[in-house]
Length: 137
Image 1 (cartoon, rainbow, N blue to C red):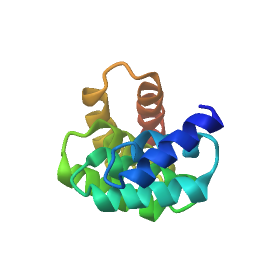
Image 2 (image 1 turned 30 degrees about the vertical axis):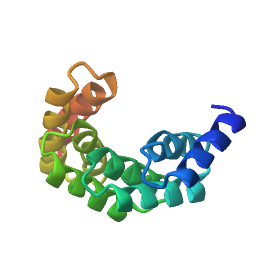
Image 3 (image 1 turned 180 degrees about the horizontal axis):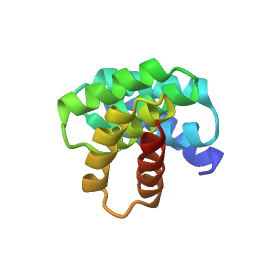
Image 4 (image 1 turned 180 degrees about the vertical axis):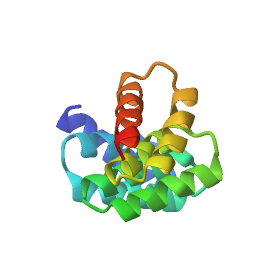
């Protein structure tokens, strides 16, 4: 996304702080590696839209990129309290638990993510790696 598009989204958000434009703006800033700005946009958006699991998801992914897996886990768990079948939160928690060798939790979340987004190659690779890792544990 271009700098002009980011500027336009930022202006739209400034004009209407309750706008959902914070979601693509935070995503874009995250993708560009502008973590401080992405965190600010995601936090404000999640605060204004506490009922949206997608707001918690983007907040979690920013926190993870900032090196705060505990904050990411809290945000994904908040998303699941709002929407227990929310695939992105199960995906994120599945990967996080896998990295932390919390095999049982990883399996639980990856299984739910597989149901929510069947055929996702990243989830399928993680599922296969989990089965191997768990059998060797």
